[in-house]
Image (cartoon, rainbow, N blue to C red; front, side, top):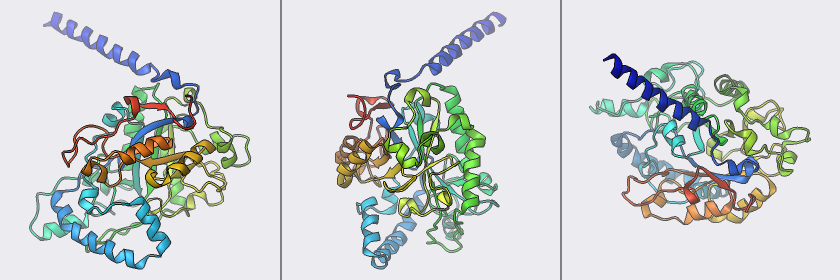
Length: 400
């Protein structure tokens, strides 16, 4: 037994040693001389999410449909047009959520280099631990609903979920636990390419059920706490911040347009945080930029318009109608996120036109709900970066 144990221990050491050596190797060293805005990576949308219980989805579908029908008659024409650009296809809510993501480490191991984290402000805890959708079904006698992380939702702190009371099942119920997962993976893969983390500050509720949770707005204090949590868990040395990019330039926009992004070589093992400040990218006014015209001392780059003093990150999800605009913005130095599929429509009809448009646009981050084979529609649709690597030289501003 002792001899056998020695052999097993030796083999384990060899295997672990090999893994450590492999993890320390820099992936795609040929990209080292490029700036971080000169590559293109594949990301996932709502990366933390686990599927909604199908009975809750079926119950809520007609409620959401009536709500959307009413909304289209109430909002101004320009807002409606913007909404339709971000949500171009007639899909039910349950169809729009017909994806199933694994944990962050599985996604990152598969080559994903951008993740999305939706965050709710919950300084006291207990705000989201009794989902109103489940309460409705419980009162109807349905008790065997899909489990969720109730204990984590009871704790004070930022919560990570998609839609309060409805789409709340998550691999990481708290922002903190999601950040820890990122840190653990990064420490095991110190030579990794920079990872782009998109954070959406959820400041609106969709109260379709009785006793729905009250969603708190993100004020300056909340954003200060959000930044502090990122620094606490990941460490400042693992972050690329607006101040790093602005350097000696007067404005962040000027630095970005002058190409002052860091190189891939100096960005290995680091994260770039990109903030959607409110309402799913539909509203750019935010306390995050209050008295900080260049995001001074902030941790995240913020969704912006090209002429903002802090302009750096721009969200243009619909590459089918914005391809030329995206290409021009990429040439000017901005980082752009676009989507290869929106609300699962492309997977449903097995259509790659949007994915092709997104890749050809040069948007640095292409987000998908389907990064590997197998989807709920049983089509062959899934998206991978051309040539299948975790990143490639950007087709618009990278090295040919």
